[in-house]
Length: 175
Image (cartoon, rainbow, N blue to C red; front, top):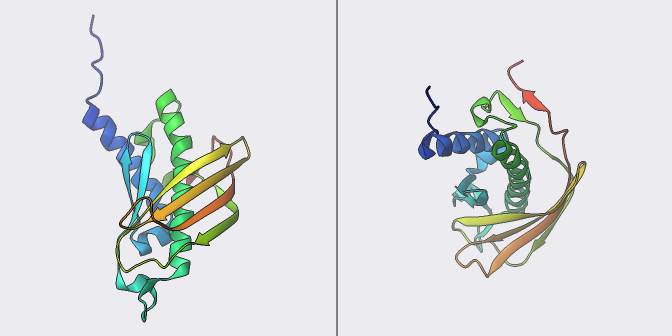
């Protein structure tokens, strides 16, 4: 009688990291901006690496407001999607190996998104974390905070409301 050995932790971690990368890469603008995500368990921190092309006002210099807004919105969408995916992976309903660039869950659709610009974004790396305040069957509310050198000194924050796609909708981008 043979028992299946549990998978090594590294294999599980790699599959989850690949699932997250596929999700992020499903938003082409996030690739253009260079946004990456650091994952610790189910907690995500978004990173916007500094690049000259992100500067809106070269005299200050300061990050472009549209870049800041997009960074916050992408962070909110990925956090919301990841929280739903994480639940499905943990419960065994979804095999992360089945997620790739061609087979992704549908992303939440933005209903509204309000950004508070608290100070100029400086020409350096920026970080953001999102928190899902409420997630029902159809709608979700997400709050996002962005900072640079000091987590307690935010340069922008936002709140968004999103339409949740049906839970069983994996989008096939191959056809």
